[in-house]
Amino acid sequence: MKRPRNTPKIAFFELEKWEEDYIKKNLKNFRLKFFRKDLTERNASKIRNFDGIGIFIYSQITQRLLNKLPKLKLISTMSTGYDHIDLAECEKREITVCNVPTYGENTVAEHTFALILALSRKIIESIARTRRGNFSLEGLRGFDLKGKTIGIVGCGNIGRHVARIAKGFGMDILLYDVHKDKKFARQVGAKYVKFDTLLKNSDIITLHAPLLPATRHMINLKNIKLIKKGAILVNTARGGLVDGSAIIKALDKGILSGAALDVLEEEELIKEEKQLLSRKFPMERQKNVLEEHILAAKDNVIITPHNAFNSHEALARILDTTVKNIKGFFNNRKTNVVK
Ligand code: NAD
Image (cartoon, rainbow, N blue to C red; front, top):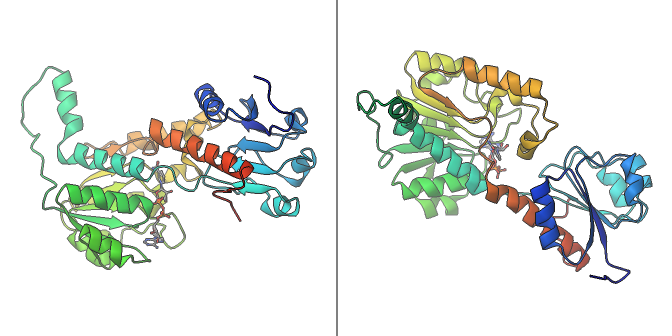
């Protein structure tokens, strides 16, 4: 198909083949070019006259790189974070920067419940046993979620979705957050409480707060004694929210009857979940994470490898938002502009 001369030219970097196909299908009215690698000063010369770029966090957008892209008007990063982009320089050059603010609140919340149910119904042991041809029920009795209390720490996009699902299960819901949304609490029949109250009263404690100086080790050796005896701890947020030695102690003393972790403190360098799918994520660190998994492999602990975000739909939403950002920009309806 012959396109008009002024058709915008967009180059994408760091995409897998299926992502490339997706973009081609959804951005038919653009001239597109794809690179498997990140954008660097070296390959920038290949897109000198391009109007827009779609990048991930390994493409460092510096002043020097921008000097090589004099026609650039739009940077759409396929990430939530944008600290790989020199925003001040972009502003000077009147380049618009867009991002993907959210993509997976239901995805992470669903994984949270996958972990909770795996513990409450002893799914892992059950499957391991039947695979060995053993159909005995001994030691496999679980517990109902209906009527139990779930304590949600951090009630933002993901925490709220966890609350909605918990409501469906007929659970009592306690919330702890530094910002309270009383209307939301009323909608799901939840109650905001102090952190200590949440620890004392929850059968399941699930963490959905960001890792900040204020939240680092918010579950620690001092406050584990407040936790309701026999509770379960679920962490799909960031490993640094809990002091690992406190979890081990709480499990050993029977304060916690189980823990389900999608994140471990070791992997703190991860900024974006999608980074985990990158070939650039060092194998060595994966091995460290794996070692930590093995260390923590107690019978009543289940660990997933920071996989809560990883659904087809969540990754497709990243691409959808990127497509929307690009179409919006060239149709004078900018979306998700980073300031
Ligand atoms: P969000 O910003 O929408 O919500 C975070 C909530 O935490 C907010 O309501 C905020 O007020 C609250 N909060 C901030 N400081 C707090 C504190 N000191 N005490 C209690 N609450 C506090 O974020 P989100 O999208 O819901 O994500 C939550 C966490 O999940 C993030 O840390 C993110 O890194 C993590 N995450 C993990 C995965 C995964 O694959 N495991 C995927 C996406 C996000």
